[in-house]
Image (cartoon, rainbow, N blue to C red; front, side, top):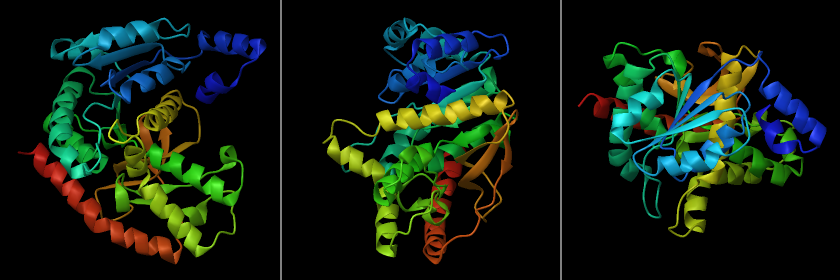
Length: 340
């Protein structure tokens, strides 16, 4: 349904979509975006305004939110938009939210590692999650703020301290890795990208990102060299954008798109749409690591089921073992930070 807002263009399609948008069968859903005036937050706010499943769009940031809310609020779609600015208004921004999306923090600049991001963004995430625990403890939380491998464990620890941790409701958004894997694979396989699916497992940084091209559909007969190169390009996708923007930003537009896709899947799950499956970084027992990205079935409680990894190629098995130490270290780093 979310895609249909972007794709369908005939007037009759628009009319039927408008009718459906205001249909009483669509539940009221409040979505809060924390960091809504930033590089990811603004296009994400736009895309969520276009989603007919959203009835109330709450935009929060430490500055400039009234302008973003006024701008997005003029768009003639279902949701009402309110902007909130500064810590004093965070409670109002979160109250009654069904879904909270967190793109807050600083973006990666050239030469900056995800570890460099850690000290700034970890503190921001810690404060925001303390507020979520207080003002909308039952909301689904979609974590975009990097490094996701550490910020999700931080959020979990903060929620545990508040006595309201529900592992089914906390998600690290790894959808951009899936989006990139699909795009790059379609280009090499010479198949329509809209028909492509590629699961991506592990984490959300460098070598921890492991696309499972052996499970890609439709299957294409690509050489091992091509698959190795595709894997590397998917892992380095963020760096590719940072370098191409030459110090002027990071992956904001593609991340906003990926964040909106995953949020849409979460809303569909909440609304009882069956068989909504997406990859996400969640609390997991499918490996020995406490958090891991894999395919997840979404439902009315958030995570309904964490699906197993399926058959892996030898190359993917090696990649899985290679990523574990780094992912383990990132998780431990987040837990330690949250408990300081």
